[in-house]
Structures are given as C-alpha cells and as structure tokens.
Length: 308
Image 1 (cartoon, rainbow, N blue to C red):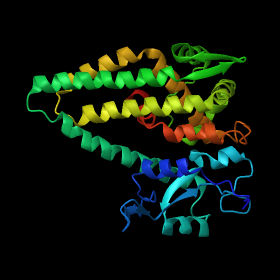
Image 2 (cartoon, rainbow, N blue to C red; image 1 turned 30 degrees about the vertical axis):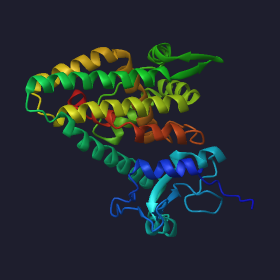
Image 3 (cartoon, one colour; image 1 turned 45 degrees about the vertical axis):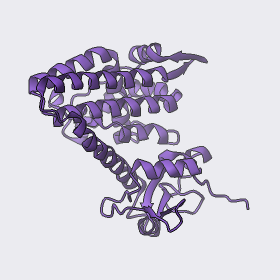
C-alpha cells in the first residue's frame, strides 16, 4: 500500500541497531532491545529505528527543508527502545533534534569503547619486548586502515574527480585556514566567525560539493585516531614508548591530514555556533553539520592545551 512516509530501508534499520549494540540510545535508559526467540532461527527485537526529524509532514520535529533521501538517510535515524521512541514523539519540545543527535553520538561512542575494552586483552603481555613489538604491529594496522580510507576519498572539482592523496592535497590547498585559538566566550567565537566569514563560506562550499565521500573518510579516519589513542593510553607501555608510537603514526600520516581535519572542524564548528550571525542559508546544511557530531578526536584536539 502506498505511503507518504520516508521510512528507513531494512539495511539502515539493521545498521542503526548494531552501531549501538542493540541498546536504547537514551542515556537514562540504555535497555537491551534484542534477545532469543522460541524459534531457533529467529531473534526477538523490541527496539525501534526512530526518525530524528519526522518521516512525514505533521510528525514530531518535521523539517520541511530535508529531501526525501535526507529524511531516509541513516544520519536522520536513532535506535531506541519501544518506550523511549514513544516518549520522544509524544513530547517533541522536550526532545529536540539536537538532543537526539547527541544521544546517538554518545551511544555509538560507548558501543565503540566497549569493543576497545575487549581488544585490550590482546595487548596484556608480561614481556615488555613482546608488548612493544605487538604494539608496533598495531600502529601499522591503523596506518593501513587510514590508507584504505584515503583510497576511497573522492572529490569533484569543476566536473573532474580528484582521488586519494590528490584529494587530500586539494583540500589542504583550497580550504582556508581559520584561526582556531580557543575562545572562552560566545562573543570571542562570534568575532572569529565574523572576521573570517569569507573563509568560512569558501570552506563550506568545498565541503558541501563532496560531503558524502568526505564524511565517510572523516568517520573512518577519526575512528582510527580514537582507536590508536585508546589502546596506547590504556596499555602498560611507558610514556616514552607511547610517545614513540604516536610519533611514528603521525609522521606516516603526514601533516596535510591533520591540517585538513582541523580546518574542516573549525569551519563547521563556527558555522554551527553562528550560522544566523553569518547569514548562512541553513536549508542545505543539515548533512554538513552532522560532521561536527561525528568528529570525536578533534573535539579533544580543539580543546587541548594547544589552544589554551
């Protein structure tokens, strides 16, 4: 029967559930939503792939500016238990879109961290030499992950595709630098944004033209950085050894990657904070603004001692 709802595909529903380990994304709930069924070839799932902005007009948090594809996209979904999915729709003003996006980001991060805890058993090695060698292998495994993500990066400029290292170099050359000095007040951040409005608009235009492939690259590489730091920080390595492995990793990564990620992060950060002050049309920004929620490593990087 035809429907006016922009529902998620079965694949997206499945991925939303798995990305939070089948647990409700509400931080005050976190109930498990999957279990066994009396039929051996089935499982009982009581979770819901809920829409952050409604699937049809008149629904809670409906955003008329989203396209059908954006409304059905995984970025517009959040995994909840049955009770919490009803709760957020019955009281949408208490549960706005930005809050649900925060729930989703934190739930996915917790799910990822639980995997890291399990992985640590692989590195519990009494022999320091053996541990050192295994950690060296681990560092190069993360570099291999980065290389594979880079190979999939593709931008389009003036109708022509630009791939992998050339794409990274293009971003480095064309994304304008914005002073990321940490600002303690909203007024300070606003002054930075207004003074660099031209640069922000230029960067947004470049990001927007290739945002799908770029977002995939950012998520993959950001997870790479998080995994590396989590493993090193929780290992029994000496501080000197941890410093050695990080130096090896970032030396192989190259300065362009960190510079590009920093420029993307600062651009989106200031846009999100001050898009009305900058007089930026928000109709086409929904996908771009999800980038900020996805970048976990650079949340830390931005607020590090480097900027205090």
